Length: 177
Image (cartoon, rainbow, N blue to C red; front, side, top):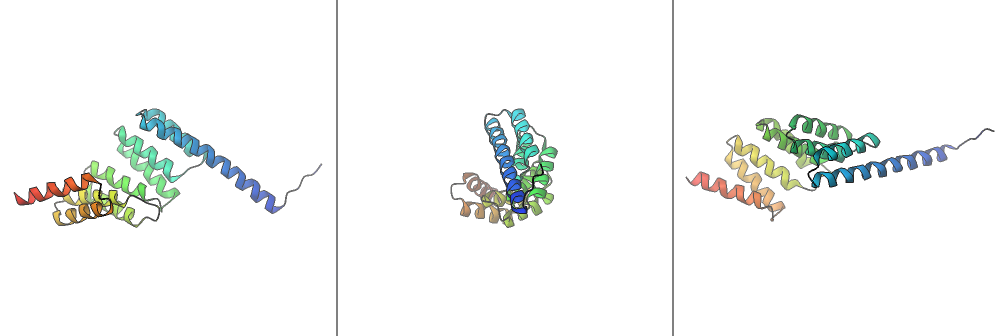
């Protein structure tokens, strides 16, 4: 017996398979996130990796990187965020996270382009984080005026972001002394 399928049937089958993979990957992603919230970082890593194996997403790579950062593995964290950018260059979290990790490594100037890219990203809802991190990078570089500007922009975007308020107050005290 010979079975044939039309192009439409093949496309539908392919789309259905893709959706199944996405659902399975999201299941692993959510399991990883739950483990991460419970500070079970090794289990979180395992689940994020399973998610990526089934269906790679920028979110899974970025959250895997975030988990590595909790373990102090900043190089692995940066590598995962770079993979996330390869998967989806419009996902802003990856750029912001790389910037934050570079700041943690004392590489302030290297952090700036990533943070600026986060501010341009189409898929990013937390622009206040990128502004805050830009403020940190500028502050560490001794550029107090631009540090204050970014801290204020973070606070304008998210008025409840107390850490930005504290950074502004800290810089005001330092410049008055």
